[in-house]
Image (cartoon, rainbow, N blue to C red; front, side, top):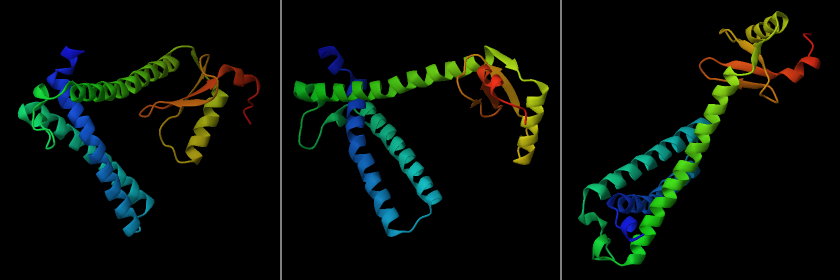
Length: 185
């Protein structure tokens, strides 16, 4: 643990992570103050909140780069020593903050990757083209609601309920079990 707590990357990431708490809190207070003073529409609130999150992320990246590129920037006003000269508790806290940040970043990323793989799998495996009646029905409904692209309909062995997969080339997947309970009308 001593070698890990001496890592300059983890120390810089720890400082950036700890600083991001007050940075995001400041942005949150700014958001609350702005939305309470001005009567914003929901669209403007959404755009303002997305901008605040992006600014917070940029601020985090700037903090990380700042601490990483400067060897002496790891000193704090109330601690006059650098990280390498400070006590072990501070190093452990910074390393723990870095590891926690990386874990909170990697675990959802792994789950997102697994879900993406599953979506690719259900789109390609166990699918069969729907009969002509169902495809005509889907095209008719798509035209009624103003969808100009061709809507593709498949039956799938892998899905348990109807699902739409894809954004650029969406596909509607229906479970095969629904064939018994679905009439064309």
